[in-house]
Length: 76
Image 1 (cartoon, rainbow, N blue to C red):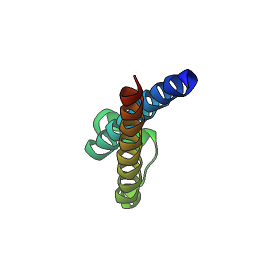
Image 2 (cartoon, rainbow, N blue to C red):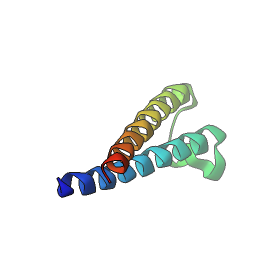
Image 3 (spheres, one colour):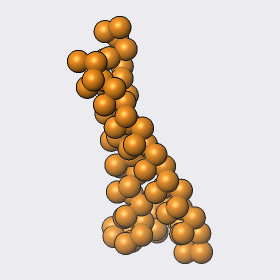
């Protein structure tokens, strides 16, 4: 049972960090700061699709990570 608590905390924190990083990438892609659109060679026509995918991924990842952290927190 101790291993499950540790893994829940590790995966929850990791998932939350990945979700926050993808949200930051979506904001950088939208604002085009640091010429991110040029780096990824993203055509402007597909920018809304990229933003939608990144935003959905980040929201679900952060929510899932917080649920894992909450599960770990309740078991401690």
